[in-house]
Image (cartoon, rainbow, N blue to C red; front, side, top):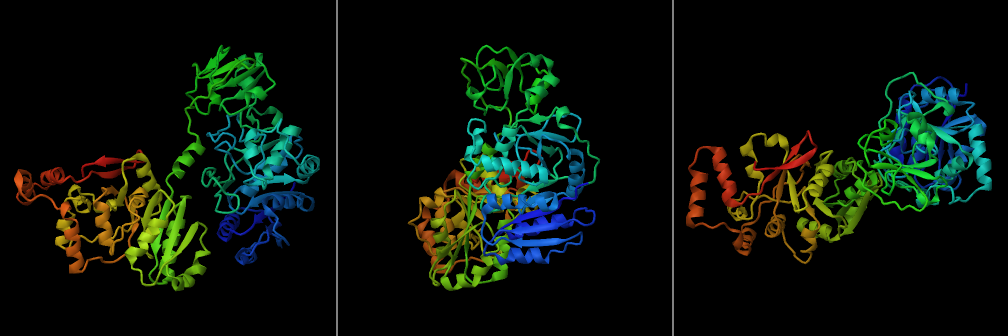
Length: 629
C-alpha cells in the first residue's frame, strides 16, 4: 500500500498556513507519514517560523525554502516532482483546510485506484459549484461515494509517481493550450495557472480525476496572489470516519466532461431512449455548440424542431432527463443549420450573485487620535472576521501616530489605506477626510476599540441591496427592543432633532451608521466642526432608517456640544423645527402628553411626526421587513 507524503505549498500567508497545519494536526494518521513543507521565496519570515514550530509527531517533517520566487505554477510543478521521491503525494496549498479523515481517504482511494489507467489523479475536494458555468453542481447518484470529472483538482489532490510522470512527459511536448479542444473558460485563467494545462492533458489523453461526494478538504481563497472568488467554492468537509464505496471508472454512471456536463454514455443508461441519438450535452447553456462534431445537442437553450423535450423543475438538471420529466425547457435538437438562444435557468448562477454582492463594497473609516495598539487590533480583527471580501479600511492619522501602528497593519490581509492629516485636525474633520477619499459604495466610520458584530457587513448589504431607496441606516441591538415601545427612542425624524438638541438629548456621532456614498459625494465641499454638526447636515438631506440588528459594540464616548455651537446649529437648521401651532400640533401634543395607552400614543406620534418605519429581521426567511415599531 502506498503511504503518500503530505506536501504543503506555502508562500506569504502566515494565518492561512497556521489554519491548515492546525487542521492537519487534528487529523488521524498511521505512523511514518512525511510532512513536506515547501515555501516559495518571499520576505515574510513569519511563514518559515510557523513551519519550524509546528509539532509533527507522525513521521519526518521536512522544510524546503525555494531559492528564488517560483510563482504558483512553477511551485506546483516543482512539488509534483516529489512523486519520484515519495511515490505518492497529497498536495495542499496553504489556503486549504482538511477533514480529520483526509489521510484515511487518501490511503483507501490510492489502494482502490492504483491500477486505474484512466485516472490522472485523485481529489480530496468535492465540487458544489461548476468552474465552467458557476451554476450549482451535484453529481448524479450511481450508488457510490465518488464521481469522475475531466478536470484537475487544485484544492487538495493526490498524485502517484506514474500519474505525475504521464502529465510531465506530455506537458513537455504540449506547453501551449490547443484551443480546438479545450473549453473556452480556460482562456480566462492567467499565466500562473498550472491547472489549465493539466485539464488540457486530461482531455487530450482521455483521462479523469476521481472526486469524493463528501469533501475531505475545503478552501478559503485568502487574500493573496491568485485568490479572486472568496467563499464561492467553500464546502462542508467530512467529520467522522466512514466506509467508502468506490466505483471503477468503466462502471460509473457519474462521469462528467471538462464542462461539468454528464457524459451521453451515462445518460443513455439512465434513459435508454437517448441512445438513439449522437449528441453532446449542454444543459447549462455555456458550450460552443457550433464546435461540436455530433449531429444533435441536448441543451437548455431554445431552438426549433426539438426531437425530444424535458422539463427543468428538478435539481440537478440531469435528473429531468434521467427521470424523463415532462416539459419543454430542455430539448434535443439538430445542430446543423440551427440557431440557439440563451435562456434564464431555474438555478442560481453563483458568479452573478457574487458580483451582485460585490456592487456593495464597504469602506470603513477609522480616525486615529492616539496610538492605542490593543484597541486598534481588536477593531481591525473584527473587520477581518466579517467574511466579506469587498472591504477597504481607511486609517486617518498624523504621520507620527501612523509610524507607531504601521507594524500592526502587516498582520491583516484586507485592503488597508493610510491618509495623512495634521495632528491638529479634530475627529469630525478626520472622518470627513475618510468619507471624501473612500472608494466604496457603502461608508461607515468607527473608533479604535469598536467591535463589529460577526454578521455586520452581510446584514448591511442585505438591507441596501433589498431596499434601493435607503441611503442611511443605523443598527439597534434586537435584545433592547423586544417591547414595541422601546424602539421609538432610536428613531429620528428631521422634525424632532432640534427639540432633542435643546434638551441636550441629541448625542449623535454617526459611528457605526452606514451610508451610501452618494450622501457624501454630494457634500464633499461641506465642512462641519463636530460630529453632531455632521449629523445635522446628514439629517437635513437624508432619512435615517433604524434596523433592528446588532451591528457592533461602540467605543466612542459622549459628544455633547458647547453652548455656543449648540445655538449656532439651532439657528442654522431652524427649518427643521416642528410646527408648534395649529390643530396638528395641538393634537400631537395632546396624544403625546395626555393619553395613557402607550401603544396608541406611539402610533399617533409616528403619524404626526413622520417617523420612518424600522426594519426588522425575519430569521426564517433570512431577510429584513418594514415594521411600524
